[in-house]
Image 1: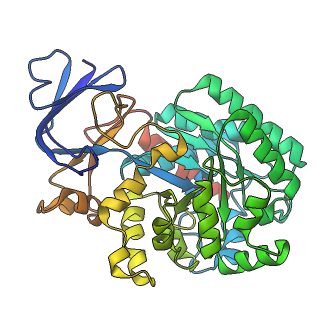
Image 2: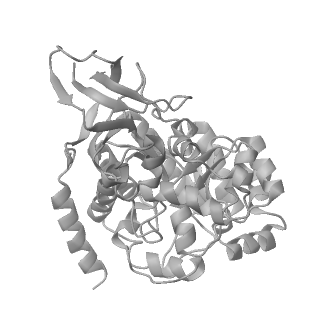
Image 3: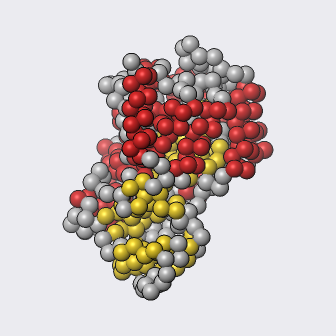
Length: 437
């Protein structure tokens, strides 16, 4: 018995969203070996008294940009076009060590807000093997599950930056896919074209071919802002989604961030392809992007996930905050109340690991031991009226005490164990002072 939690309140996230009281959870060899009242009592090994804990599956942060962790609070009120150069001008050429630190800085906040897995739409211009490996190694050492999908572009180039030819960009990522497949069970590499309008069709086609060849994901921005959507229609003569369909990129292996300015035809096309949409409510509000038509997407049964987006357009990586925002933002749109996203809907979207080929999302015998334990005395859970609703509505007053990935305790009684959190935050402050001097 590697570790056991005794007398816990467990939310297994089963189909009934049941609540199991006085429940033991036994972890062996990275999996949940036993689950139920009394199964851990009298055993050998470490047993944690969990009478004050609420055990739930960990959550998935399905869209962020880790270098932005240095750029919190750097901008007051800008729309997307003005925000992009302001946010990235200082952080688009970091050293591998600075990139490693920025990723782990984000992990610290994600662990403390329930997220045990991340899709990092990672940017450095030009992309390099060293930059890719710095982020991937940071997640490997931190112990969480991660997909690192470096941003590629060759059409809209940041001022003062050069980009590699399309074939060279794809080759760097494809080599990274193979390298990390051999190296890690938890960290993978995918392809992350920045946005279709920032990439030539040659680059997008090469990405699609390589992703199919290596059986890995593609992740991109689509129609985040109104101006971006308009530019794409002018460029292609049709919508961004229809252009991706024309190029053969739409599939269940593609996930798109934002999709704020898509129309009914786009929604039908995405639904038919099984493409995943990642909703980023906090950054959409922060940049004035608009409100994504999540209600219509849900009616069409498009797979939905939820992301924080980067810390420069959100000013944090607090996943519970994004989860709450996902529920509330829909209620000020034209979505009728009967179709509002419920808290249980949001928790399903927050644990849509299957859409990204990851384990997780349930506490059950034989499942991967990926879970968090919240203090039941958290202010957000006091008084305890409905555990599931308060997991969503209780942000930010929720306290994560334990976090496990593959049975390894990454957080133990409130302390991160997989890396030195105080040292990382101190180093991040030093790096930021030099960056923005």
